[in-house]
Image (tube, rainbow, N blue to C red; front, side):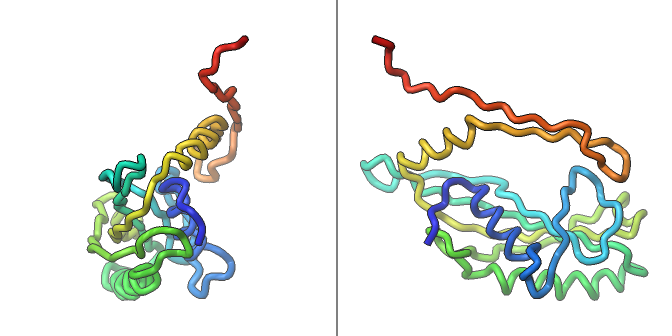
Length: 186
């Protein structure tokens, strides 16, 4: 089992499960913030949206319970009834793949919580249906994992894209900061 360094480890494992070329029903990885231009298959995004910690014992370990939201975006379907014919099986498929799945990570298996349609009038105007599926899991945060998290934070990358429908990359940057060890120089 692989350690869970951060919630992003869980997000990436879920995204890989559904959006990789090896997935039997390949979803299209999307960035909801960038808008949805065209989808030839259901769109998929995942995010850890909240969490809470409890002390496991006096060792400094914490148990982190995390809420995971999977968002499915269905587009280019004739009407609302046709979208629902696609939405319900897609929801069922995702739940069946994730419920009681630990993704090969050192965490409690995901548990399905609920799902809801969050389609807005703006979505309907462009023939989009949006469904959110909620899951929970739990893993142990150790003092050692804080060092790994610090290393991740020492290298921060940004990508700036155009607001046009093709979302052309305008610039990319990586900032690498120096690790501070709080030991005075001698």
